[in-house]
Length: 244
Length: 289
Image (cartoon, rainbow over all chains, first blue to last red; front, side):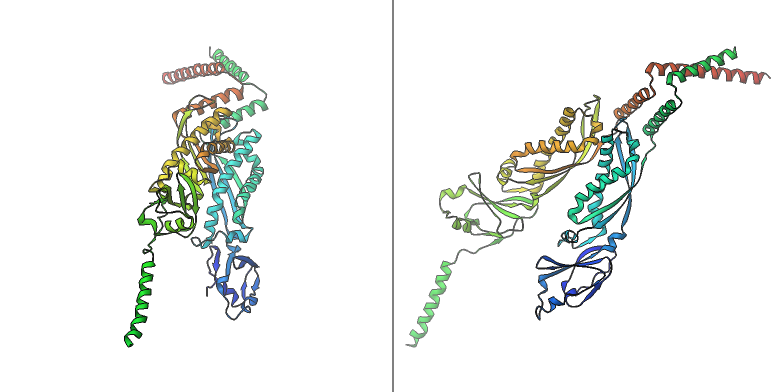
């Protein structure tokens, strides 16, 4: 008889059905057991609960355990798993058409929304689903979606990438909808926090920033480039005059 | 008399044994199915193979062609030409039987193909007219829908056709279509290659449609196409372009012209020279004191 494996990284795996049929077993909060009979989901036990399958024991003196399958899902493992990561994007700015490199810091957490779909991911080759395996599914989709949606919002609003941090909540919502649509077939969902968007201070970005700053200054102080030049010239002439 | 009692049953038993022996078919050899890396294996239509039994793995099928036309697709666990002939009332001794061709097709290998494509493209930009090197990375999912077209298109009527050979035949086809798709899309939509990141969804739809039409005869369909990355290869042209764009924005945003800039540069130059001269005079004066 298999004991429930005590591994802090196992999210879902098959357990010998006889383990639950032969005796009443107790599962704790966030622990779940899915019980299948002849390939069909029969019962879902959500902890804390004592699993009582006495009815199956009474079906006959000898129970044919081949008819039953039990799967153990540990939500504790997945709920503890909050991942923080960085994504680097190098892309031409939509408005200024200058190559800009940006860093996006994000945190995400996977959540199981459908136990049956999660169990269906198990196969003879993949008999244990770990946190790493779930991240292998969700992370590439997330990375792909973050980039796409930042660019999509920038394009829709016809703004510069440098202004994209203002729209983080809108971008986040779009990403969540897209990612969750894609991973719901695995029985998963993600909770995402877009922590920050920073721009790498290289020649292109710093020069563009200084141009934009100058433009703002000129607007605020209400002068033109030509006027500034004229004053520079007058100062120059004045210095020359004083020297003579 | 006792010889009659023993001899008669004995001769009957021997007779039955001989009868069974002569009625029994030639020994059936169970052939193992081809290895997974082989996509198609031909079962030669000859006497040697006539009574052999071929054991098939999951998702392997027997494909039967008659005069280059798909006759039947069987997904049984075991296959023998003689059983097939007897169930279809086909006389294996007639010349007509030579027109039947039997193949073991490893269907599982191409039921859901997911291919990563990484191909460098160098071309003249649609908007700015200078050469740009692009490095798109795409993931393409392909399904097969028509067995007969697939066999004809990729000429699978061979003694053995490997899975890697299938890729060798398929990849140039996909690469050419993706490259042409990118160029055509940018030309039609008048989009610079540097801005393609903002139009990936439209580009994916465009190329999927394009490959779908191109592949109509191949028996394959594109299920999904996703551009994972679309990098622009760093080059001197790109550096010059970036500098040019920065200058362009400087003129536009700060509302001045090239002439204004040159005037300022000239003034700065004179000013600098004058400052240097004054400094030199001051140093001379200091020395004189």
